[in-house]
Image 1: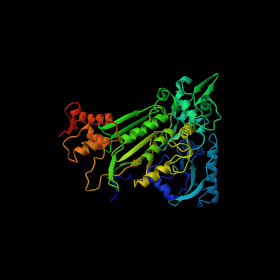
Image 2: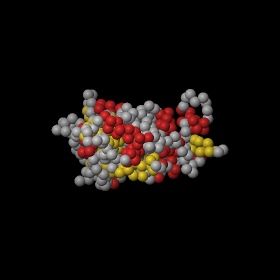
Image 3: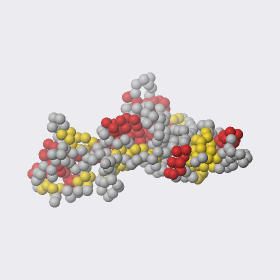
Image 4: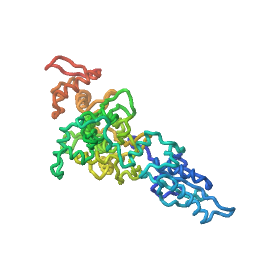
Length: 486
């Protein structure tokens, strides 16, 4: 029987960089993928072909099937095929700038000869037809709205959002203690000043006689980055069940990008479920529901590679009972696709990636997706699932049931008690009362169970259980203890 924690089966979609077959075409048609597949009759006007090619080039790429129209009542011949190919190339060259695409191919779809035109994903320019900038929305070729056009120009042009001057920001809006700490950690920069380092790294730019921070500079070293770049934060939440509900723990993680990464890791340590096993020496050993290194890698990737020109939403880090979701604004950058994400390398935020690499957060040359897959496999967990959403990119990790002690040993609670989320220290306290059948627990008892945790933290954990109606506090001060509320 399949595990209930396994991800849903993936639907295979054709990527324009692959060789298209009749089977691929029929699968796309059956799936209703009109956003990446269109079909035109052999005598369709060249302007119609050009419009679809330009729209796909400005979107996610795709494939156009053009019928081969015979010149007479005779069967389709070589000359007819060459004529169809020439019409496609003429349409591609009528786009501004000229659209350079792979040479069209001939296939048969249910016995009908068709010319296959592939528009690869991640084209290098923004394309226009007769002064119009189009994109693909379902089966329609729609005009790009101004904000979407600007984002596309930023992503594909020489100027990127991270390299633009942060609006209204001044040099004094940078935290120069953080800058100096970063500069002092670098070697091989020839003893140049922190200001010069930020200029070289694309975080400061000269405007007349003054230096102004770029968006990258504000995101990495700003005193208050969210003041200048809305949505540049992380919303982290732990939900009690497999869906969003009324019982959850939430934290809005703000600050510079390095601070956000560290704070997100703290949230994960506090909120990932822990199972307990007995090791070979009979010592209790904790194991997280996901490898922490894998989750941390995904958080760093989201922070480094998201589209910061999208201000309406931030990164979302959601923990559910059966999965973890990390959603980033903006689709996959450049030529990166779901099919090549493990091996393809491209970043829309090269300055941010460089500095986070300098700080030791990421490997400069890769996304780390291969490492995440390997770490999940080592723990016997399903492979990550990658998905493009309407407004961004999402990664999902699927867990297994909470790890309990051996069958003969009392188990913990999988992070949930009476429908409420509890942290690992609270699990130990409730395990002490419920599974070990102790009538009461004191601060000292919990300190013995969690010897590496500060006593004030443990006191707050017990008080939190009281406030949520799980425990009752008895006595005062040194003589106080806690009992389970029936």
